Image (cartoon, rainbow, N blue to C red):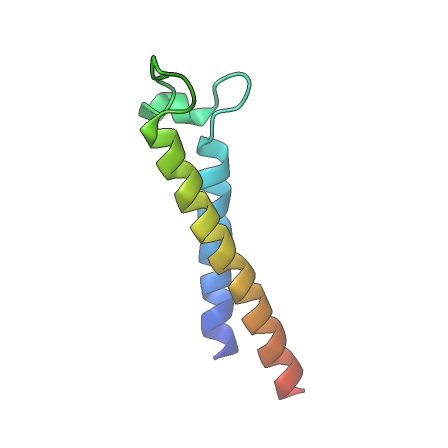
Length: 78
């Protein structure tokens, strides 16, 4: 059980790293390469950037949940 959550934690860590790098910063970021850098004329961030924000938050929450579960499993095992 610990091994499964540890593998999930590694996968979520890599995915979270990729998602954070895709965000647009002051200079553009990797999201410009994938079409996320287009600004809407209304102002604010584009739909792609908002969806990227939402996905990043969900993956971040899953990452934190995996950390907590792995910690609890290790504590209960010992």
